[in-house]
Length: 408
Image (cartoon, rainbow, N blue to C red; front, side):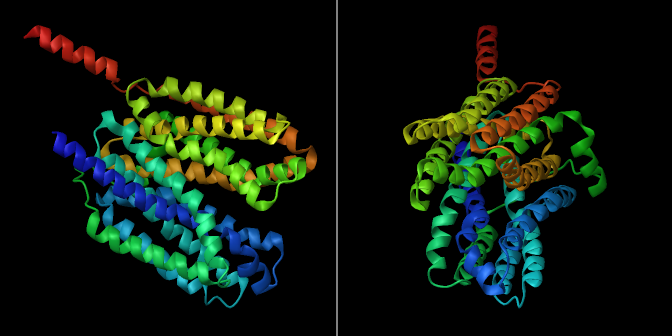
């Protein structure tokens, strides 16, 4: 039994590393957008922003589609490998794009292929483990996700110093490696309860009211991340005069606890009612997020970012684990796709929302208004969580073993 659990953890660790490689993609090209798009195609800043937006749109549309297709076939690995290899080829083709319109079309297709890889990897992680370990496993996957996002920008920026299209070559090589690795290290888990059709699988994701609980929490968590990443550096520059390097280090104060505390909080969610954990951490997170705009010094900002990163680390693995709690193995990929679609929607609309609020009021009030949006989303999501049957907690398992022992 112990050997089986160890093997499962190794598999989850591999999946976490592959998810992290996919997440490089979201920030890998960002530091070179000026040279790659604005200078290369004589584009405006607004036109350059579409390079990020179209990928998010592809995520929103295709995460659930690929999930439903994977559930219908009962296979994960072929889709994951195809997603990696397709992304690899498309990143290389982007370097040959003759104009901005062609580049954006290729970017959209690449986004569809990339989400096939990372969303189904997360679904496979749920397939591999028992329900009682959903939280710990999703904590490991969450660490890979957060670290990939965090290291993508500095590594991509370094490659960008060698040429505008060099980061595209780098991304192509990374995804090629991911495709080869997935071919040899991943294995599908036998799935007996397959949906009758892709359409019925998609209906299931929205036909059950309970799915909206974790979906809305995903929206809130990713909305807050996008809001902070966009508006945070502007706030730090205007209020405290920090240069780009100092701003990046300040944002690391959020990223570090967010990445490193995913696993311990995921394990904690296996030992208590995940619904209670989500409600408590969600309310605390929204409150701390509102405090970002009230800080008066960089030391206060560091403290607030550290605490908010910790609360964010409580949200992600617990909400991911609930997706596994409410789904059969044959529905894991579809519901995980819905979770990621809502998260991608939150990340896509957050910069626009932050910009509108910034222009209408100021940095400080904008953060407060952003917190109100996060709090409202979490409150609605908490209503839908009430319909979810709580998983068996560690305390209940201990009591069950005690009763069985006394019965002997």
